[in-house]
Image (cartoon, rainbow, N blue to C red; front, side, top):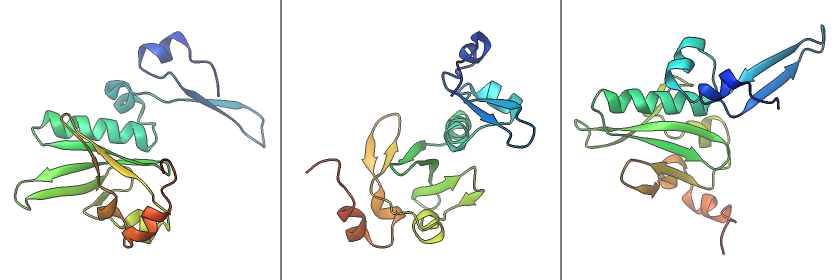
Length: 144
C-alpha cells in the first residue's frame, strides 16, 4: 500500500495499491478511486469501484438497483426488472447478466454470505447465488 496523494484523496481514493515490476523494478501506483467521474476518466478499477459506478448509473437512469457484497471478496449489482418481476444479477466486471451461479459453479467459490444493499433495505440473497444453500450455511462462522 502507498500513501494517498492529495489528488487521490480529492477523488475518493483513500486506498492506493503499489506494485513493483520484477523485471525493471519500477513501481506502479493504483489508486482505488470511488469518484465515478474519475473512475470513468482513468478507466482503471476493480470490481468494487465498477459495481459502485454501475449501480449509480442504473439508479441515475431510473432503475431500482442494489449493491451486492460477497463475503469472500467480490461485489456486483442487481437491477430490478419490471418485465421479469424480480431482481436480476448484473456483473459489470465480468460482462454477465442473469448468471447468478457464476461464482459458485463457474468460479468454484465457497460462498457463505451474499448481502444486497439498497437505498431502503439490507437483504441476505445468498440462496440465489449458490446451488446448495445448506453447504453455504455450514460455512457461516461469523455468528453462532
